[in-house]
Length: 421
Image (cartoon, helix red, strand yellow):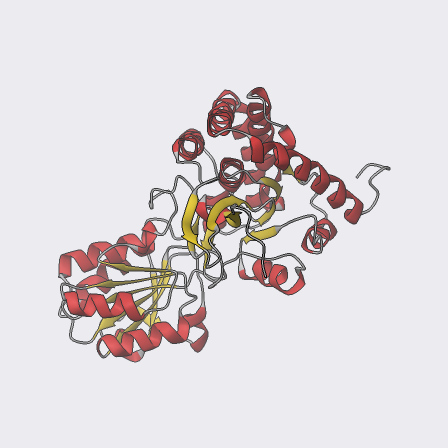
């Protein structure tokens, strides 16, 4: 920190004031201007590929030396394909309809005025995240497209990657005629600066944490700014008695093993006692290299299933470990999910439409699925371009939070001279 900005609170105030000034310019920017800035940012990232990958290699090397898990290293690592996917995701956000100014509804007041609700940006959004450098680009793109400024604070594991990505993004935005301060990256890893962000009510309008339970719990406990968050991704897949065996096996393997370190990875498999091919499914998952921990009925199906502890049902492994429970029907499965789900994503595999309809209606999670892998719990896969996170709360936004979730609204009242008696 410089001598002029000698405390975390003054640093955050300085950055927030610059971000709020930039946001006022963004709020006036046209759809074409914002979209053009994002395309310029994507081009700048492609131009800086070598520098970004070199910075990422430094982070990965440090992560390996510090004993990061395989799942965490997978989240951290960039290569040419992943960097190109980041650039494409930014361009996808650029191509989405601009939510700002959208008319939500229009009605007539009793006194005759016309009432219009119209979408507007939230303002300055603080985003605190761990490990994944792609969040730098995703969050920046979504905030800018929806007319919001962003103050980013990435984890120390990805510090060099985040700085390289941010530098390219900001250069692209500025080249397109929008202020570079629209997207700022906190220039320090000092944890005290995070505390200052959380207490910056009136300067930062919303905080979005993306990371493990410890990070999210700290943000929710300490914040004086509204928080949009999810906790664990304890995602369940329930194989119903009427599931197609081949489909059930394919979905279960994909839901767990495609990428074990993402929040949409299945962490608990529930198998109906009446499902005839449970052995084939468990055997296939174990053969794919996954450790299985289950109840006594699951252990009886495959001798590779280890006993599950009480903690296993409430654990987000983010690794090749899976909890397995044999359950007695749909009600038993939904009771287990109600007791242990984190409200992120839960899925049913079945050919019984009535069972599927009950599951979709009664399981109270942000995302519920029928005959699909929970790995599809992603804003890009939902056609949202990207996501700033999966919100599992009940207020404002739920599920993948993209452009619409980064807006609020104002009432516009159109009168013809009415005065209230």
